[in-house]
Image (cartoon, rainbow, N blue to C red):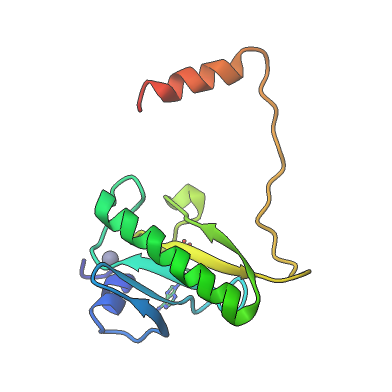
Length: 135
Ligand code: AMP
Ligand code: ZN
């Protein structure tokens, strides 16, 4: 993918602060971190979202996320959030699938929480039925 910033990092055309690499995956620091130490886990093969990534690459990135999360925990004493934005409305800016591993600290002021809605009447069942048809 010619204009993909993460493909350029994979190809070594632009620099990144790498923390992990294997045959299928690269992980490096996010340059605009939610907290210092925030890492991105990126499949070397371009895919846009979780819906398109191959099962092999998905397995590789989630395993790498676990390694990096454990390293953040040991090196920074951090808890962590795993976040994956899929699609523009979900906040995805770089259209090369990636997992965020965000270190969390006591009173760090970062909020990855949402307010809760309620289902009315039969809506709960209706949503489950609707979704189940496509699985
Ligand atoms: P997302 O909103 O899930 O698409 O996140 C994309 C992330 O990539 C953002 O948090 C950016 O700060 C990060 N990012 C963009 N360009 C670079 C780069 N050259 N090196 C490291 N991180 C980057
Ligand atoms: Zn790409």
